[in-house]
Length: 398
Image 1: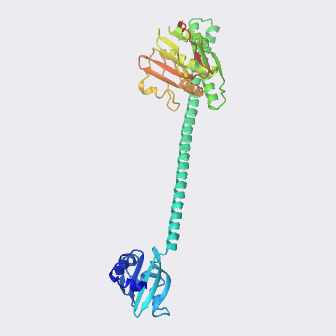
Image 2: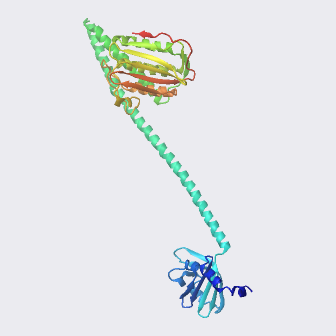
Image 3: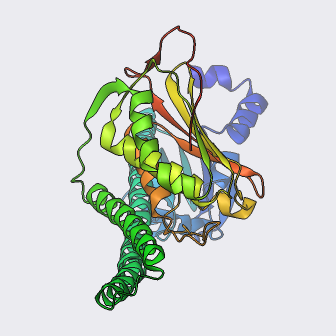
């Protein structure tokens, strides 16, 4: 019935067969010559069309038992053994010396292939996620290695600094102390008292400087090995500072330097007293060292919203701009002689940075060469505060 109806539409049906992409049509002669192939089949055939049939092969089709009409029904695989191939659900007919292949994509096969594509996409997505995870892990590992490398560099710098101090900065003053002590002993024995006071003063200065260096060295060593406990308490900053300033009164007097205390009497600070004392002693000691005679050193405090900011300023020689960035870096730290040829190691400021950081604060410096320097450090307001009272008058210690 359907054939009768369609027989009246030969051109339209023929055009549909030629142009459709879902129906594959090929007509071969039994000598393997391709007589016709529509667009869909042409897309599947290779340079030698008959050899494109790989299952069943062309030879298998022409050797089939049936010599007329339907000789094969099932999947026909076309392509190349070495490359991609495609299978179509087809019927193969034979009339005389001609072989007609008609078929198309099987819906079930398409669904199966579609599912395979989806699975491939899922596999690719999983692989991408795995690669991203491995990339993140690799970046984390590289970051950790870089951090460890920086720590090793710092440790090497620490070791070099430590041995440098022991080999030179400690040995030299001890040699000088021993030398002047021997001289003093000899003068006393010979009752030669000329210059004995001057020599004793030199021994005193060397001893104080060496003791300060030893104190810094011990504190630094303990901080590096984790044996320095952090024990913050609340106390009066002004009283604490005055005790430290008194320690430097004689040294400051020898250079006619005025140390001004601009800390109000009512300032309370929450900090580790040993660490804060080390910070203030080093900053004041440096200020004295690099301030000329008749200079002024001022210690002040500002009440910031979240911290107390303490400053130690002087009108001394200042710091060259290219040196400022090296002050708190152990790997690049340096020291220059003071205005009276006082020597240093650069270790004090490293300690200041570490101890201020232990409180959660920061330390910085503003300086202009020839005009002086101001060192600022902050201590967070855990319990530190300034009450709303009038600031006390400045105290000058000579």
